[in-house]
Length: 328
Image (cartoon, rainbow, N blue to C red; front, side):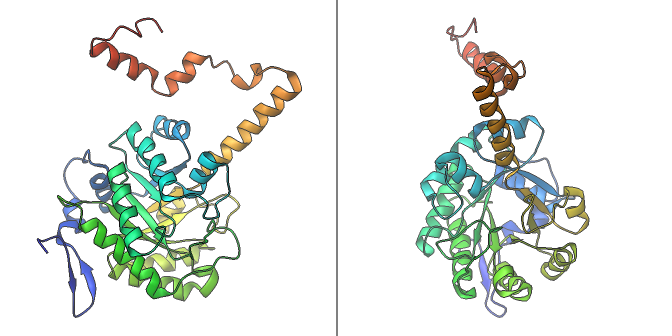
């Protein structure tokens, strides 16, 4: 298999020497976002990825200095479709959003939600390849049924352990088939803790790690002790924790999550919820006063466009010999 990967037949454990974490410990951070994410996972410190929902929130996260972004499925569904996270968005919706987000700073890793993979093994493979082509550094794929919902809502249903592992294997095989050798990160997510219990959730993630998942993601972990025990049970695999204010998981800080042993922390709805609050307030003020003066807080159009990369575009145009934007 041209050195890409192999399965240890005796233990039925996936191993790819090219993706061994030890290979990513040293050297400068790569300009390739997937390689850079692997370097961040292999080196000290927790990876903090704020949830973004559109170009504005992505720009704000980059401006704030975050070194990794998270494209939340719930946030993307809300921003692109104005709909709740109930399996309404499609693969095309997510890929189109990812292409835009990844283009803003192509070196910054973007971790993207891939829901259930949108179908059987062939569709999971298509998802991985399209995400990788879009510039995404890694995705997470889950064990909910196709009519899934946000992991912090009630009433979740999950597929069998074997079907979940089939999804993970398909994702790994798809990644390993990308010409040239891809560093794309596969994150296995289980929502089974609330349905079948923590023991089954940990068992599923152990099996997913054996099948080739690079990171394990247990959704809706409810206590500090459960997160700590999960990290120990899955070691040395990195563990991702998802924090949503008011959700099933306590509002751990990034430092607290790091102290518990988590390697990645995502804040899925941080931008979306902030946007709802800010936009509601602005609309209510406009309705009440008849002006947007107070909600603009002194930001004029040029300042807004500067936050969206205006100066970089104008500078590039001038360097290329353009003259359309000399006065702006």
